[in-house]
Length: 64
Image (cartoon, rainbow, N blue to C red):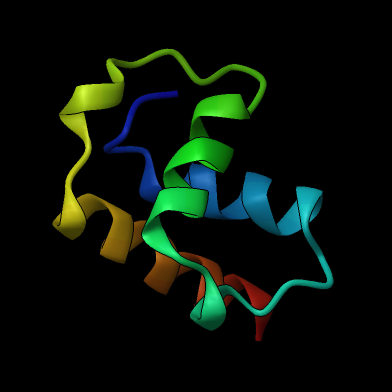
């Protein structure tokens, strides 16, 4: 997975943290959790606020 795989990342995060409200997540935690996902293989410095917002938005939709 890469940072641009926002939907896949959101699905993985939902599976890993089913009881967490993604709208309350700090981006520092979100960044760390994405980096810790199995199969994630991308440069930590390639993410930014826009990518993290897109992941968070996809996770919110996944959690609904």
